[in-house]
Length: 139
Ligand code: T46
Image (cartoon, rainbow, N blue to C red; front, side, top):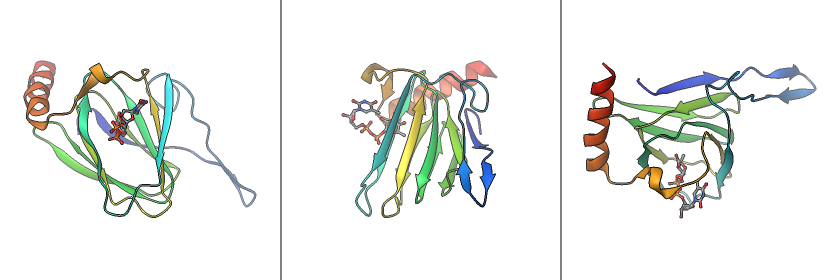
């Protein structure tokens, strides 16, 4: 799917435990300017419901699991993030919804830009229109 791809993160270690380094433009395709994490999400709560004009992000559920639905305008997929070595890259103009947060889950997100509300598209209809223009221009 365009602007979305799972990224498998190589872990280092064995019986002594695991470690995963994340390095700008090395095992992820952008430089990190911001990190945030989401946790303590009540059962049944859903988050997201927006896309970004420019932002690139990597999502990793470092504890527990979460489902992420992604939508361009013509494509739609669902990913289960249930391991600290499974990352999901989401680029610009992709609508995302996060659901089925397991108890005690922690979703870690690395972002290519600082926070600005200007970059958000929080209206689905507007997203579908803009995403159509964006992806059709790319073809
Ligand atoms: C995304 C998904 C995966 C800030 O003040 N700074 C920040 O860096 C962020 C991310 C959020 N906020 C504020 C904005 C809202 O008032 O925190 C509040 C909750 O944000 P939001 O409702 O956008 O949270 P989610 O979980 O729906 O979405 C977040 C990110 O905002 C978004 O970029 O892709 O996680």
